[in-house]
Length: 168
Image (tube, rainbow, N blue to C red; front, side, top):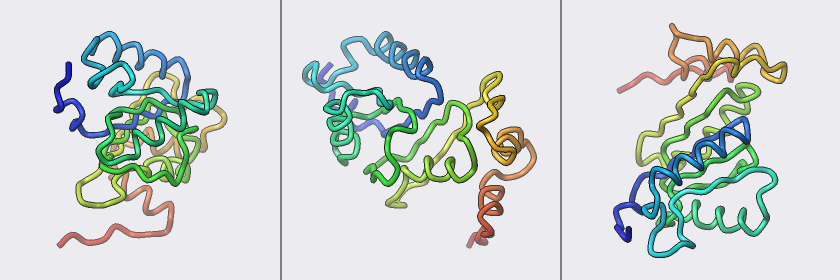
């Protein structure tokens, strides 16, 4: 459809640890949205996939379209190859499918959203069976993932020797 409302949908980053998960999400979006996955023409898809081996021209296009405030690209399914330090205008939701390697990485990865602080940002960590079994994941992030009793923001701030500011 050519509905402009599709382009005003909030931007979302879906960060995956496995390429197969990225492919599965991409197929799901394609199948569910059909022709509604495009705005105006087939060059303006509302979602994209970005990982280490993505062609450099595609990466450049994704960077421009996703980081632009009024860009058509609304959902980015990616790996950690989507660079740190990128300022994504109007992105406030970050979904992590599986944990980062450590708490530092997690904080860097979630720091790509909500930079203008005009709206509350959300980082959601989705777990799946065996997602924290890797030897490349630190004890701290495994503990963070398994935590069910303490505010996760407090855990992150404590890790960085900072305290939670009192609310007004």
